[in-house]
Image 1 (spheres, helix red, strand yellow):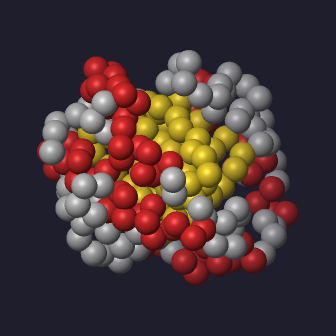
Image 2 (cartoon, one colour; image 1 turned 180 degrees about the vertical axis):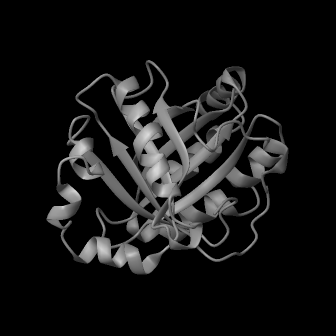
Length: 237
């Protein structure tokens, strides 16, 4: 089973370029992981300035399985990758990490690591909205609500007309993160609709009984959204 290392880096502003280099360039995270079969960097994304704390970077790394994660963690802490870890630590104030598992209905589930690029190649940046929710009901009920109500709601429109498309749904592995918590990794398809979302209040008609915004309050009223922009070289976009 593929597991996912999700990290939120509080980068030192003056070292922003050095931090990115440590992931992108020869000898960096993308390159080093590409020499083996245990893991691959999937996403390197900046939180857009003006949408939250400054100099935040989110990375997602796919790891083949638990044994591969143990080897990777041991190498970072005590072995061959420790000098790289020290280099990266010098470019950031701190990092918050979670080990995530994909829920059964997640579009991104297992990753064929052999298909993930290991060399940077420029492409257009992509916007993602990462929603993290903390339900006040059992976590399984919240995930069922997303699968039953939210996912079909997004799919009713042609892809070019959608605001968002779910790429992945993750939960922290037991013992490695906050519970109850669930994460939606969503690609932004329509920047005009995103601007409308940010600049206008949700109309009363959308908050009426039976509509998604009202129904969702039965499951959660606490969540956090990050607006992320992939680097032009991020392996996936």
